[in-house]
Amino acid sequence: MPGLVGIVTTQNKDINVKELSSKMCQAIRHEKWYKTDTYVNKTVGLGRVHLGIFNPEPQPIFNEDKTSCIMMEGEIYDYQDVKEDLVSKGHKFSVDNDPEFILHLYEEYGKDFVHKLNGSFTLVIWNENSHELLIINDRYGLRPLYYTEHNGNLLFGSEVKAILQDITFKRIVDDSSVADFFSFGYILGNKTFFKGIELLPHAAILTYNAGQLSIEQYWDFNFNEEYEDHSEKYYVENLSKLILQAVERQMKGKHKIGVALSGGFDSRTIVASIDKKHYPIHTFTFGKPNCDDAKFAQKVADRLGTNHHFFEFKPDDLASYAEKVVYITDGLLNCIHAHRTMQTSGEMREFIDIALGGFFGDSTQGHFLIDDFTNIEDNFQLFERLSNKVPIDLRNLFDDNYFSLIEKNLSCSKNHILQIGANVDIKLPHNRLMYYNFKERERRFMVMGHISVRNSLEFRAPFSDYDLINFILEIPPQFKIDKHLYKKTILTMFPNLIDIPYQGRPLIISPFQIEKRHLISKMFKKFLKILKIKFFADTANFADYDDWMRENKKLREYILNILLDERTLARPYFNPKCINEILDLHMSGKKNYSELIGRLLTFELWHRQFLD
Image (cartoon, rainbow, N blue to C red; front, top):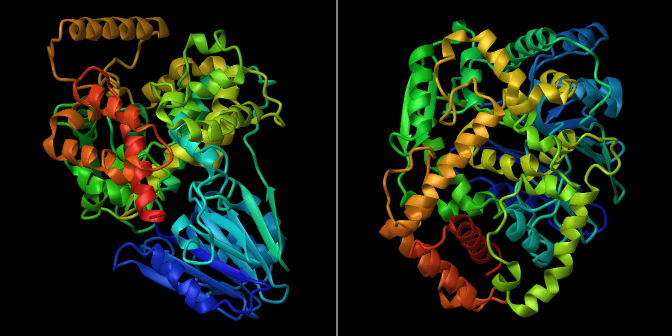
């Protein structure tokens, strides 16, 4: 993913700042057509690699007396009123883009300027007089940035591999991250696979001055559980207004904008909310032919009159893209979960510059059912509901010696989960569920998918609009059971979409009916499996990695050649006998282990690219 890189040195006189910062830029410049901006002096080197879509003007941007400069990746929404206030106070704009606006805000308000922003961004401000560096990101950490202190230097980059350009940095595997990845499918907290390299927390202000690093959090999700007694109509009217406002804000600019349109609820809401003055727009759906996403998205596109495109997923494409996915995401995303973005974002680029997506929709609008109110005993059960758990005992998966090493780390992971929100006064279990989702799954798992999209396109998430999120946090949880208020709002706004199902079921259905349908479907599939009958093709999911790994010759051979390779089996992490059993059980159809196989494949490819 294009982004920012940098180095600030205070003690190491032997380091070549210009040379290292150039290498860091090259490390995240994955395509020849990417643009690069740099700033270098004796002690600081900053770089920006970008697609030339958001704020395409050269950076850094300087203030009037050249004492401060800014580099920024991302964008800010709807700030004309604040800008006019700055002009009235004597600030002059010459470039007239987002980073220049922020730099003037910084001059006027200091670090507090961040409270006046609404957007998706990571930015760096360098003060030449004080030799102070600030790194600031948006509320949710939508654009990851990693950092380390090493040999008296601060190194940072939007990808871990930028930091690794310092050849003196020792690449030591963080065993607790390995434990996390194979327990949950992603790494918890701010860790990476390397000891000493961390992810910048969300809503963070990192300050580095004279070798001293500090991080403060300027915002957090605030669940005020003393809810006001408003009617359902009140919430429907305000949610409607804020959804439309959020989408309109993110239609700004003269860019070519489209929507990744699945068969789900969130993306169709975005398409329907786009003002017709922006039409015609392109919509894109990906998956197996005749899958639910393809069928329902086509109906939405026909109803709303978009230029619709369908891209077929081909199982053997995963074998072609896996290594690139792992490299771009620094191994932090199971490669099977980036299949659609890597395969299709390049094709979408032929039609659009920016893709809108439904990210944050499920998390904010309520994806829990009745039992989420009553059947949760502790915080760990809450988090387990959001995790892709491994269907085998990790004690068997790992080598005995390595398991004894990480066993303590597994306990630490559970303690980390239990501590999330310990300093936040959240009593209601469904609010804790949302909070954990925001802090961990969205930031460490879902955002990683956007990184692979941004290899070709810019990505916007209207449901992350600050005003919209602020209001959603004020909605009493009982309105969110099975997205009740969300559905009511959309049915009120767009009655022409009522008859189009989502996720294979009608829009209006009770939680009891959902559980009943799910149980019947589960029992029917189990019955067919007992009889060894493949009665019908699974059309619900956009991909079928379980069968693809078995039946597609190219993909099957690719997986077996890597995971059964002597180099893989000789590593100190896993029990070779268990890996053979996992592959045998999966390939024979006795078990479905595609998620676990994806993690094993991802970790081995990461090892080859970043350690071997």
